[in-house]
Length: 415
Image 1 (cartoon, rainbow, N blue to C red):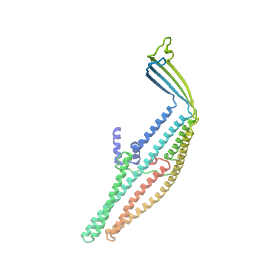
Image 2 (cartoon, one colour):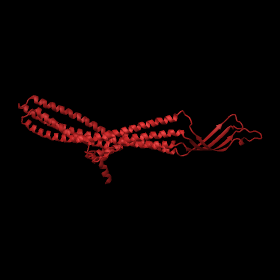
Image 3 (tube, rainbow, N blue to C red):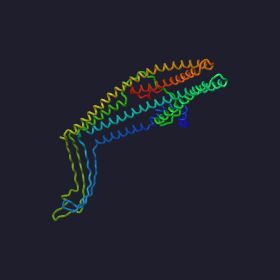
Image 4 (cartoon, one colour):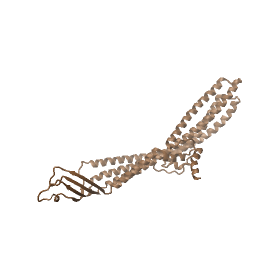
């Protein structure tokens, strides 16, 4: 029974229409750009693991087979050697640590980039989602107007046959009908475009939508967005790379231990002398190496200085991005207030045009007013209906933008 219900769930969703929340959840799984961001995080994680492994000793094995001619007491004809070498970096001035910390910061920055893209993707889906609803509302209003015009054309033709109307009256209504028909075609095209873009973003074909709205913003506190934090983290990455370069002026201490065994064939003998005494078949070398750069005409210094300036530039960009986000957050709040006022205006305008239209229709059908007055009233009511819906959807888009610039994820506020 459970399997049957699960199989029927997609059909139920399609019958009711896709919700905004459902579309965003599908985008989280199907959007290939978002998948690319996830893979970039995995790549950065592999780089972190690589830098962590660099702290461990390295163990290498080797083997060689050498044939030499001519032979000598100290140069046998055939030498077979195998060995193993252990290398340990005892001190590197903090270079490996700085590089590891840089890679960890890069991984964090890639996560910020993924989250920032996810929020931008959500915002794009919101715009397309409400765009579809706006065009559907406009299309509905235009189709209603088309039906109304068709009815009036039919009525006017009857009057014309009775001699109560002129051909000019019919032609004027027909021209308005054709203009409205063109508006319907243009709206359908815009509707298809928005649906196709939704499919591109979410990976699913959008046949119908279920209406969702955003929670009314109350006590929303500002916080830096992931896009802003990504810039700050990038600045810290540059700083760590500068530290790694400066480590080149500090002592570099390494330990190396090599063990080898050799076998010598085709040796040249000499009476009273055994060549094997000069040729070592087994050897172990333990060495500690200390090195330090004492002069490079300032190369390391200048390389590090360059990165430090780059870090300062990135920090300046972070300050600008943070200020820009705060500015956009404030503007988004003002936009909400403006659209609230516009919403009241469009509702009042719709109510007024509906009342006017109903009154003029009665007068038009009674022959008191001409078709110009009627068409003007019809157009105003159609426009008012579409405008009312458009403003309502624009308000929802404005709320999503407000949450976005507040540093929040808009999808968490869908109701």
